[in-house]
Amino acid sequence: MERKNILIVLAFILLCEAAGNIGSIFTFPEITTWYVSISKPGFTPPNWVFGPVWTTLFALMGVSLYLVWKQGLKEKKVRIALSVFGAQLVLNILWSILFFGAKLLFAAFVEIVTLWIAILLTIIAFYRVQKKAGIILVPYLLWVTLATLLTYYVWLLNP
Image 1 (cartoon, rainbow, N blue to C red):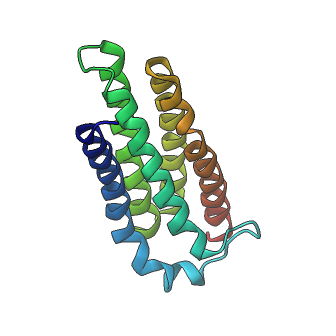
Image 2 (image 1 turned 45 degrees about the horizontal axis):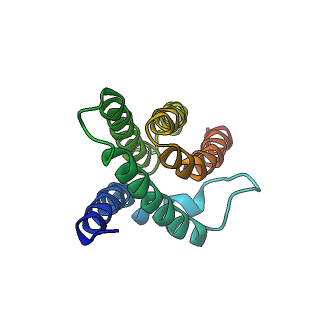
Image 3 (image 1 turned 135 degrees about the horizontal axis):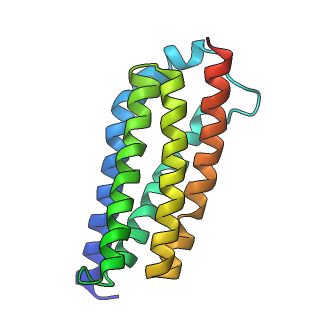
């Protein structure tokens, strides 16, 4: 890979990691205070798992984004795929704001279901542009599936 392309991939990874960092502004302060005090289902992963998993997933998003972007913005399907990706990235940030920042558990559940759908649409759109780009996002969908279940049970357990 050319140096220019490596820098572009890194820029896309940093963009996605920045989205994660925005979400963490709302998340991190609540982990040791509010989050430890609420009821959670038995299948909740330990807190230390979330950081490495999200960091990895945001990096994969950046690589996937690069693979689609390099197909060319003149292609309508590329522009559509990038738009859907942008929407799901905003929804990703919004979940942290609703769940951890505002502690609106039902709204966070509705939002994460919407995020899940947006990720699925992103995978489909990316796959149509560049198959690897869509496949790379499957772990993200699987993790958000778990996060959706966690959000649902946290909402139920903490009326």
